[in-house]
Length: 96
Image: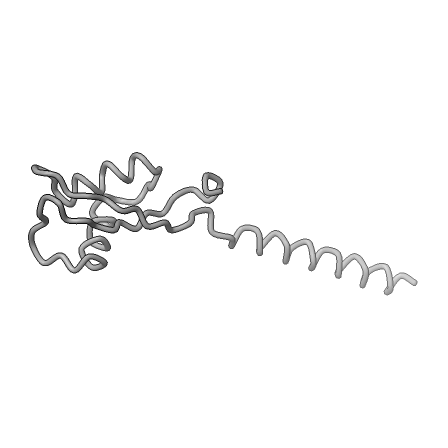
């Protein structure tokens, strides 16, 4: 009987620990893609900074800008009227 109780307690603890670990491994952010139109005087860094603040992305603007360059095939310049797609990591709780 004592061995049975120890086994049950062990199983309950193992399952609880597994649930806790699974919960902590869930990402607390989701990636969204935001379209942005370039206006005269805009820079890619400026657009990324503005969108990161607006949507709550806490990464460095340099990281966001680097990924935007790759996603939009930007070699050097952006031009007024150009449509860009910026990937942002936003808090998962805010996505519906």
